[in-house]
Image (cartoon, rainbow, N blue to C red):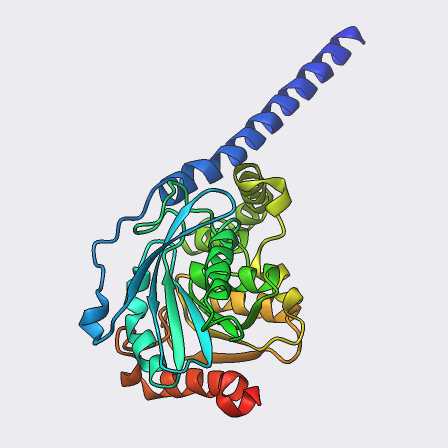
Amino acid sequence: MRRKTKKRNILLWLFAGLLLLGVGVLATIPPLVMGDMINLHVDFTTVYQAEDFGLKSTELTLQTVDGYGISAFEVEASEPKAVIIFISGIHNPSVTAFYGHARMLQDYGYASILTDMRAHGKSEGQVISLGYLETFDTQAVVDYIRSKEMYQELPIIVYGLSMGGAVAINSMGQIPEIAGLVSMSAYSSWEDVFSENMLAMGAPRLLTKIQTPFVKLYTMLKFGWQRVDIVPKKQIANLGDRPALLIHSLEDTQVSYGNLTRIVEKAPSHVQTWTRPGDEHLIATDFLQPENDPEYAERVLEFLEANFGRKASL
């Protein structure tokens, strides 16, 4: 009897040890995989100048509430009717690639501020925060806009791409002064896109499901438990009646179309969506010269003019 009890105890201890080992391995995967992706400062190999697009811009350095200097580029418009904050992706392109958008929209009376998120370009920081903390960067830009007499009464619109799209949605959810949103190729949450990319690389579906809570735990420990809900599929619910346009391509291989579906499930019913065929993560077929993609340009302008044009503001 004693021998059986001893054998059972050994098996229980062995099982417990293997379980702890498995948990330990799962807990180490997120920092190992994500470390090289987020623990860095992005110095862009290609940076565009306003003059390349026939524009004049003012370079700004804005201070966040948590102590980061944020680089931004302001493009004014004659008698502006709104101010657009442009935000780019996790590693590329530089937000200066949005100068073509700024030029196109300047012709319609929209001023622009192109913002380098923390740990990007000339902005301070050595860690990319995946959208959990970058809302502070957006808030610094909003505070600057409200400090300028010519902008004080104007609507503010956030316009983001990829991770910048996620930051735009999170900013909309957290900052009531923002009046409108255009988001392109945003992920619904970091753990969602992390799991989907594991699947795309051939990981078993069961493993990705087991791994998901460990990814969430890692981001919570890294960026603060109080920021755990700062994810697009939750923040979109804070939209209220403010207008939003969510754009995605059906076969996006970087951020799958399923991310848009999950965001829309939690969005107010008035939110507009537009999908494009193919794998168009940047959405516009000519991102630097968006007017060369009439369908894209017209869709964006239609949304902006309907909600923020002269007639809409009367």
